[in-house]
Amino acid sequence: MQKKIPQAREFDLNLLGIFEEIYKFGSVTKAAQSLKQSPPSISQSLQKLRVYFSDPLFVRNGMQLTATTTADAIHQQLSKKFNGLIDSLESLVNARSKDLLIVHCSIYLSVRILPLIAVWVEEHAPGCKIIHRDFLRHQHTSEDLLLLRGVDLVFDVMPAYNFSLKTHLLLAEEVTFICRRKHPRLGSHLSVEEAKLERFTHLDSLGVDIQLSQVNLNAQMGDRDFSFVSTSILAIGSFIASTNTVGVVPVWMYERFRHIYDIRALAHDITLDPVPIYMMYSKTSLQNDIFSNLVNWLENDGISTDEVLNNASAPSFE
Image (tube, rainbow, N blue to C red):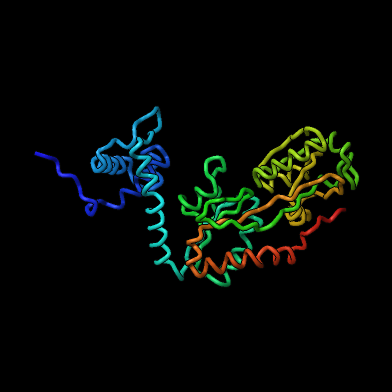
């Protein structure tokens, strides 16, 4: 007796989402964690998919599941259409309301930008809850976060080029040298020769472009001796205020914290390239009126308003 093959109309569309999670992670366990389901449940769904497509779809390769050629073809043919369908449904449901805003950015940028968003939301969408996330940069690109992780806004130093995403250069973050006020060797001006003799701290929070700036600095000053690296602006400020190290930090950070920490800015003739900060979001999100108004405000008024209020366009040398 010939086995009945399920018809397309009988196919459970929920299985497509499960397929995509297994394909993305190469793991039933990780797919289950992402979907907040049990691994046995995901395994059962995978078995249904195998029966439907008459293919194993994924074969074990060590600790990972490797997609078969059939699974690759399914992913290529269906993933964009499936994600587009989900986006369309979400936009229909939330076209005019917004009760949750998920933002991904580094710790520094969360301090820099999220208060601006909070002020706008408090006035224009008081029922909206803001959630900040900071995924590991080496594991997730901005494109992954926006298309696969349910993030609404991403602020990063690296732009995204996916056609379904909007990337906007939000600001160019100026940086400056700082040290503690009673540094025993440095006056008000830092020369290249003096810098070569000092130990440095490094704010590893802005990302790749700040690292490129470090390459530019090394070309002018030679390789520097780093004694402290941190993603925390609070730790950097405290460390510099307590030691004889020198730091390269955003001007905004210095102006905001110079009255809290025992630090001062150093005048210099060394070229410090500004760090570009990009805002990225899915174009389909613009169908939400509140979200559209928020990003339009950020693109046109948000940061400029912040600069006027905080007068952080240039460091104060003391």
